[in-house]
Image (cartoon, rainbow over all chains, first blue to last red; front, side):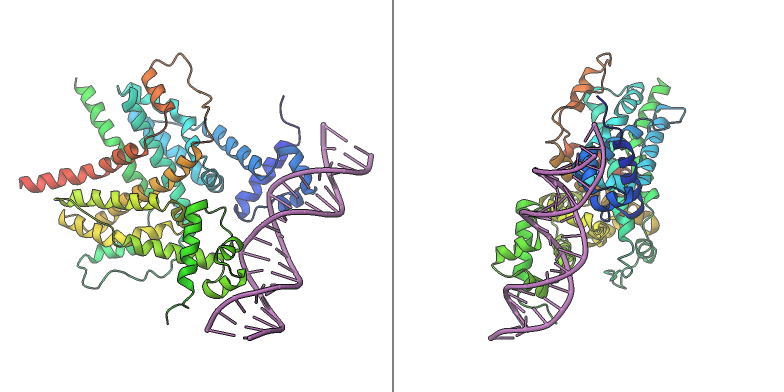
Length: 209
Length: 209
DNA sequence: ACCTGAACACCGTTCAAGT
DNA sequence: ACCTGAACACCGTTCAAGT
């Protein structure tokens, strides 16, 4: 039933190599060398590159099912869940990139769907409305993590911004802010806050009634 | 000064091939074959794979500098810009994927930065605040486009959702909604609306005073 | 200035063969 | 059941050589 014994250590080594040198540097041959084994042996245990990556993504999904949450109110717990998920995705940047590249990103919605749904139900948000809010939050978390990865790596390349801004532009502070590196945490929090604002309003109404 | 004469048609052919069969199917050798020329000739005109992709991304940036806008109020024009940009990015899905893969996604912010800044200034939003709002909007547009591409392609793979939902879950409508395919337009609009809500409120205040 | 073929150093994957 | 080496069909890129 269960997979052959050797599969787990192979996946472990693969995850370590990817975490270390990135996805591009990862090859089946390098992995085999790392394990002190012939390339073809990997094919027997875990299948080819595709299967291997799928298995790694599956692992990420399992990890994400046990994210920590805290918060006194339902909205706080939703925000907490969103932040934990984002943190985990950024910690597993390379794995996230693999999942994205292989069009598995929507699967990342699943592990915390039910927990979000439960919190939304507490706020009286159910049915199609709940589905929309849930997806909006998930999209925000996951897509901003996907972007941030690419952005942070790309920051090195763009030392010199050819300054499309003319000197005539009056708002010097804005120009200065846009030319300094993006604070992705702040942008994420701003968007999360905007998404949750209607929920907070609804919760307050509930307290009034 | 300008690039050699042959560069443009090569880039055209490359863009066409990528649009047709996707990035993965694109190889230097296939491009050469398409052009009826030796592979090595491409290297002379546009450089290697890296340079070629960079040039294609640069083209996308130029196109994006002339996005259409409409709307009577500043907020409407911001929303309109966001929607035009998203539409263009989705139309150029493969190019977007290339830009993302090569960590050039933050560059996609630049072409419409000034136009957004001008609209925000009309709302009285300037300085670091304006920078934050601007980036939040841009992040929403671009990251959701990046995600959608991956999601739509990935939709084929996930015919069967192993239904993590127990039959005991009371909200049948929610479960049904989550099991039907995501309406990315709706999710995008929901997020955009949430991001612009504070701006609308501010504009209304301004009308009152 | 432009284009070529040959060659190099890699890939992922298959498969028959070993133990 | 597990592991191997040889081989195949690809890559991107370089470079000396042609015109």
